[in-house]
Length: 335
Length: 276
Image (cartoon, rainbow over all chains, first blue to last red; front, side, top):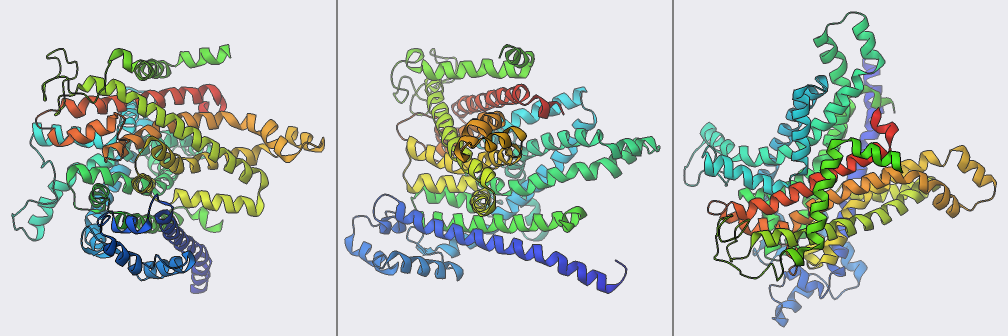
């Protein structure tokens, strides 16, 4: 890999699987759009009712307007191609409840959700690797038992209940953190002060969401460390006289991390699903809270839009982790 | 079967799980005997703390007995957990078996669909399905099955892929057994134990999804459920912690018990894998 031609060759060889992944991602998004379309038509009752979110169920003239606006009087295939064409141009329909285009409503909620799930993801991954690694290295000792039992319990805890209990402890009893919200209302902060304030509000929901996945990664990391420690290359490293910490950091950790990173990529979809209940509890103004509001108001058009956008977010995340994985593990490139 | 039972009982975590599970199943079966009458009825002064007026877990904001709700709530959790997992197992095993046995284009098509289902946010899909099809036991069960089957399909496919090359299967094929007979009578029985373990753990996940759905207000309006109880009590956490604490604890213990039993089952049914 010393001269340029090798590098270009390598990048061309890498480009092909990347393109395949991007094509797969586009396929997922199209499939979700088609699924959305048929769900509206498979729902009991008039599809116009689903689109209008039962807002004007009694108003026949209004329903006729909805039918005409969405071309519900046309053949199904014409409707489907029309719908897909709209999705491509990011036209996700109109929310009659919010009296605004769905795409606009979703766009302003996307940022907080990415902030929340991103923070939770980092907390869970770092915490899980550290605690799981610790438990794995000290397998059979007391600290291992404590970490294992705790992760089992957290893994079985409904995330919404965990959130409520943490609010009870840290916000109501100890009064360390605010119980809900996004930032102090009317504080009129800017710059660092604003982000520090927002961080205080972010900590509790992100920790709640992260804790569940932390438990999963910790269990996985523990098993992974134990498995790696029995492998030949580790025995070789020990036999040639490498110190304990060198064997752990240079030989075991890198290999033990791989299954955890794979799992983390797969879990992205459930992480964003978990944000729905977390944002509901903590009044976090993201897509999850919006989902709850849409459910309460029976705003199906908005719900369909959220599902599509969240699928896109997850697909992009999976793509990124997949590409990162290729960088981390050189063996995959040749496959 | 006896050594298997002994192996199971030797693990303390599995026994603990089994004991908790017996209590939960008992609560579900005998709910009407333990707490006769409708759990939705007002029986006490609202906001009664636990331990007073003969109320073990207090009363909620409408004066309903929280303990009665917790006992009756076991029914819907177990019902939906078990039936949705059963549906997911049927679909998952069918898809996985065909994909694993046939290979080629059928396999890549089936696995493409499976992968598609795995790459969309499952809980949002469940919310969408239940909301649009209107909440009921049937739609909730259906929605949870829809998001649970892909895992079973992948697992079954893997088992079928490795088992179909075994000599005993080849021998049966040479004897003229039909593909259906090979799949059902020869491969399936040997592929079943990891599927059973995955199924038992999947019940726990299904219960968590059901509770989250009813927490969101998407539960069956006719059945008392733990998620619903936590959902309606969450805004009153400052005044009345017990209203959300006990139903949530019930979910936690049930899911924990099923996971413990499932893992012990794994050690018994797949000894080679778990001992590694």
